[in-house]
Image (cartoon, rainbow, N blue to C red; front, side, top):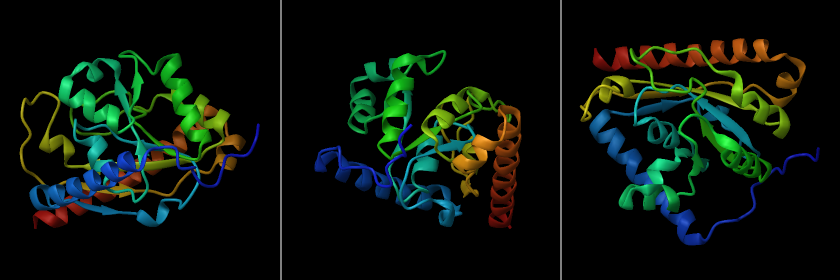
Length: 224
């Protein structure tokens, strides 16, 4: 398999690129003002090259909470049914979200995810598979490892705390509370190739848990 490109080529119209970065800046200001948002660990974000960004799944806020912590553009996954909405469907389509099946990524979503990784882009996934019921980390599902191994990309662990308190899955509307995001040390493609699936899952779980605990401490200090 050919080596992944070190820099993603310019594949989108300038209007889409501008819209993404303006939207991200707006959301970041919004999050800081309303949710006293903070993010740590930006030094772990590679300047170039593809990666799977692996985040915990606390609420509907998660794509935004993670996206505004990254200086590079992220590719998002979205259920096909969400594209049917006139306004929200237009938004995620304009942001080039990758359509996936309700019960899984599906062949189309898998191929498009791999295509973007091979272009040197970063893709955000939630390896727990579903939103948490209690705010805590859930068991990581191994399905994404096929993509990571075939595309030879690193895994970047990310965890947020406070998104569950802001908008738990059982709530109709969000509420104001502090949200913190922590980016951890990546697991390199070389390390992934040297370990079996169980070992990779264990290592990713450990790094995500460390991020989560740091985010919890940040929120705790902020409330003092």
